[in-house]
Length: 162
Image (cartoon, rainbow, N blue to C red; front, side, top):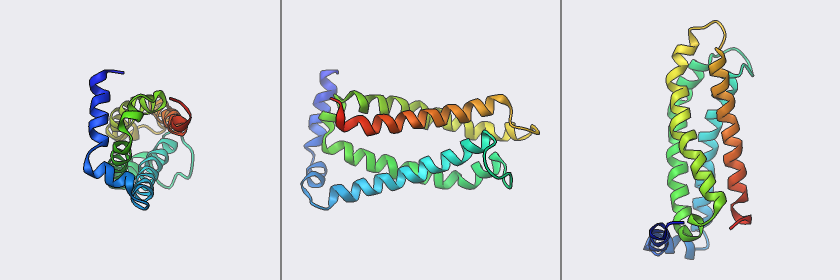
């Protein structure tokens, strides 16, 4: 890992807000619960749209209708998850930056959260015009679900790898 990045981690974890979270009996669990709430909202809304693209579930709403209805909640969940995640990261930034599972998790989140999901949101109106979701829509939905599974696996492994 680049030395300047580790130095940044050391600097960040010694900021007053990070030390306050780390030193409090209630702040860390509260931030963690907030992060998990944001993740649940963000990932949950993504999974609903992805499953719809795959043709799973009731057909009372199209993928586009689901994407439109959940758009605001999706990005609110994203904002909460990123804020909580940054605060959790700041408590032990130096350690996280040298943890391969954490690096993999972030490496998957960037293309997943910022690229693939935005593409799906933008392409949903085009895919909606077809009588059945085109193969590319199904590939995108399946790929996003697979990447979410990889992100969750990497997140669970963070405490167990160095």
